[in-house]
Image: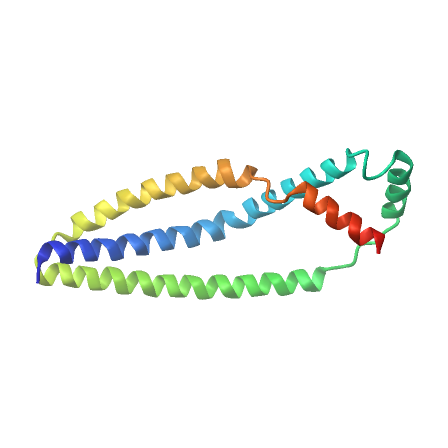
Length: 168
């Protein structure tokens, strides 16, 4: 067996394992807060856009709508929130178990192969840790700068759908 190809294969599997692990952990650690921020920013953007558009509602209509909305009682969603939290906790646990198994299998088999074929496991591991650091920095900056500030919703499409729904 060609040692060079084996080293590339081992390194690739370790790199994929590290990156997959980082992305999953990064999502679970920061994904919820970033996701909430993205949704909130998008909703606020759309509400501001609609509220400031004089062609959608006149001042009088906005006042009537505002008074009607102030009397709306929001439903108690405690049970639904509890179900969602339980589901997410279960999913997180399953993913952490899966990642743990993946890490043990990949790192263990890589170590064994490196020992068997006299390859430098520490060098391969260290190179992949450097790669992981670079990927992590790029991912964090991308999420914090681009994703967090990206406007997902098209105000014109939302406006069109709201107006059509209100006409019915």
